Image 1 (cartoon, rainbow, N blue to C red):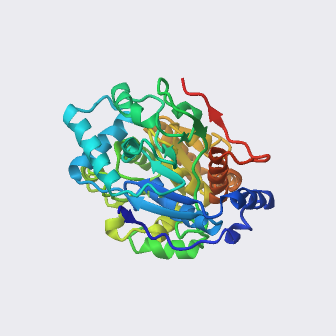
Image 2 (image 1 turned 120 degrees about the vertical axis):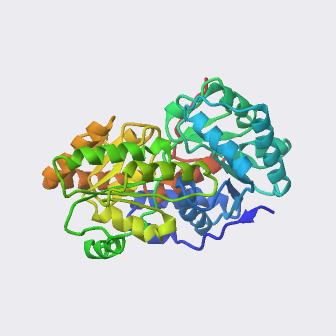
Length: 425
């Protein structure tokens, strides 16, 4: 069997003070006809990246409302994950396609993982491209197979999308962050639109006092009396850490006491991560006020929380982005947030009202200067951003969306709950 992830326990009741009474009642109503249904999530890794973070909260909450739910991890070696990284980049627009040998590697490992999978579930949720072809091995499955896409498919490499299309067309439903991500010329049976969400009760997002945050970041050499800018992201070209360093250097010209932290995690399904980490270190050129940190420096959820809370401004200068939950996290902590105008980020930030949207290192630097020069106005934007997150991007809303889809696929009455769907072209 594929590796089972231990997710612990969570109680929906703990979110009662954060979610509306109407939403909590809707969740209970939608969960009632699904009691005991077997659900499995399949993904490539149990740590690093948004999929894993979402599942550590979502899976135990699904269990708490009465589903029999598991989360399992597919297996693969560096060759396979090298291929899937190429696929990931291509689906986000990289022109590099797949060779015949790479296509064969992808299909072979999906078939091998399918051999270790027991198709005895009511719902099978497949996250992202890595396990997407497993569905091909179960043509007579009684389960509802669902593909959850977490990346930006607005301008895909058509050759790679065409390679994946026969597998994607087998799924009963495919879920995307935004309508623009639904791939054209793929005959999806149903395309459903909803954004991801954060868990406000995890160590990464729970309330943390300014004093506690200062204590934590002090352990990493941050000068507490000097302003700090922070980007939390994988070391990945789409997150543009080199552009963040360029923006920091422009800010430095007018604010010589500013510091920069680039905080990320290294995931085992991202072999390119090390190469880009090394490029980022080289681009920093030994600047002692640029702190490049990862889980290998004992950076965990609490430390990420502390860096965000302590920062004068949080940056997410992505140039391509599926959604960008680090933006949601920064907003949830009421931090002034500067982010790239890419992917799902504009759905989270109302430019000029709840944060700043930028298209270049120069615009990023200008926004950071505004934060440093007008902390009162920046804080007001941060507070408005936090309230936006409370209404739209917390975990109970995501749980509701999943329960609604399960009911729809089972033919159950949704009541007043509606799912946003779009027609694939």
